[in-house]
Image 1: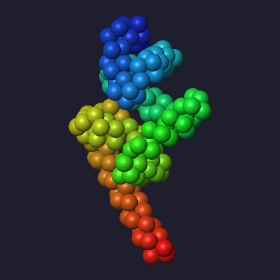
Image 2: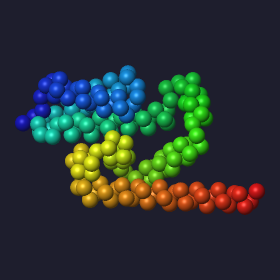
Image 3: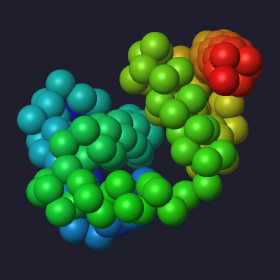
Image 4: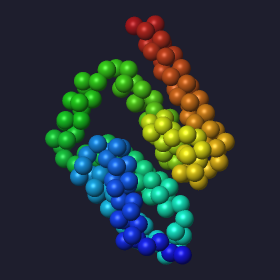
Length: 171
């Protein structure tokens, strides 16, 4: 049975909006993203079955929110926004900046779904089973992705330490 988009919007709209707010920290952008989720649902509603709709919407909201975060980071809306972002980043500690860099580089080598898995499990606190259900993988698949991401982070951290050590010796 095809999904009734209007009923689904009434029932799950608040949940989707909460998810978008939590990830985006911007009310207007969260509202736009929530609407994008339901536009996607409207486009594909005839192909979808009325089963597991909340998980599907949660996954779509997460993916669209992460895409908007990436897009916003790559293409600030105006030059003043870019300057403000640089100032805000300059006030962060070196550790946070370094951690972000490591994570960005590691996730750049992985499928986008790995970022979704990491956010759901490490940020949102979902269990491995809940993450697996949300992204459509097995628990062992989720565990494998997280283990691989951790390994990449360890490798990149070691490479950075080595580079810093070599720079220190050259000085």
